[in-house]
Image (cartoon, rainbow, N blue to C red; front, side, top):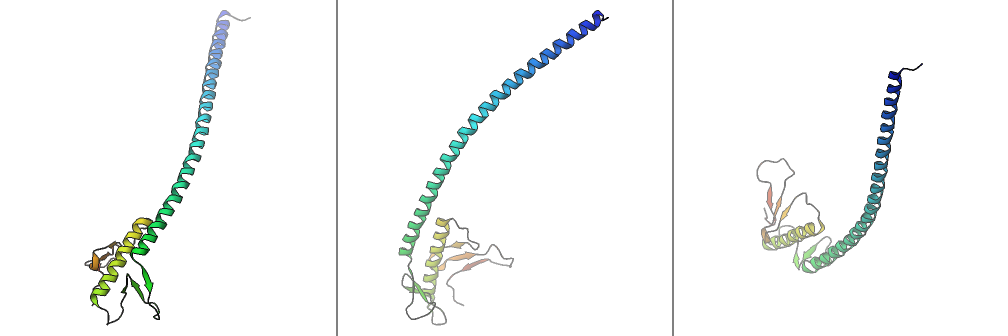
Length: 162
């Protein structure tokens, strides 16, 4: 025989279980809604990603073309040409990269200054960091050495002979 106390306890347990089941159903329903929203968001995000990849590819091609044009412009501004009948001898804008004692200090400074400017511009346009940064200052351009551990000035003037 069951007592009224046991019946009440069983009814209370049944109500608690029904309430728990109802709360779980509601939580599952909310979870399914959230999952559906997230799936829609994921689909939208994938589409957005594809669009952005396409834009990125177009920009990369555009940047490459622009860099090519800049390189050609710099080649026409600072043409470097081989000296006829002399191995490993070059000129920049008609000024010879002089070697040896016969070199005129002004020619050396001019050629190195133009070369430093060309390297400086190319590094900027091509987004290439230089290990030894160049500071173009005409015929007395500078190269800085932030890498070595030597004492004293680590800035060197290009074109100084001796």
